[in-house]
Image 1 (cartoon, one colour):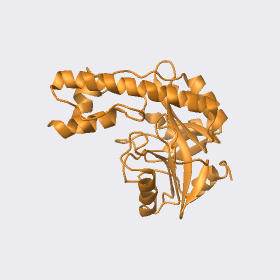
Image 2: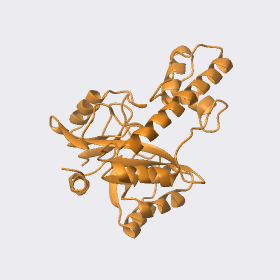
Image 3: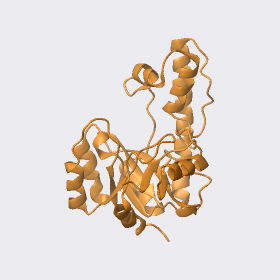
Length: 258
């Protein structure tokens, strides 16, 4: 039984629920804990690494995209205490996100001949743009990704992200735990998992599409002494699709600040 969902997003990045909505969704799902892990951005309404919101424990986290050379991967930091270095990096990433979103919107408007109803700014990502296009065209959000803004699409614009080493350093300084997100989603899972030799944790429980073999993740956990984490990567109100049971959550909780 999932009691802790440690991977969720809010409207602070590309989620569709506010922070209070996330807490309500966690309560509705019967969770004891939830982590807010917005993309490349700390939530401004959370100022403690871990706190109580009624009967739900809220873990302050972040999901940081980094460049590992042959591929880009996502790191998850838990129990964040903001540092100047992390704040500066997040600010730089948000400026880049704004410029990227503007370039994507301009490309879409030129190709589709419509005005896309969105104002690029901090926190805006491709899901926001796709939803805005779906509002004024017959395309679905998935259509927009598939035909225009997916990684190989004609309106795709790459982001400027920190190196793996820089991202790991930032999270190690600011967070109680730093781990690799959804290791089996990457083009080269083996290479991604090899990065775990310098991390604290790895996301073992995750709602992958289709059937995946968790054996490589379990081998990495054993080889590197990693703490297993897990979450649903929720961008809406549905939580608990993946996460930690009570025993697993207690192991993570013991590593977070009091």
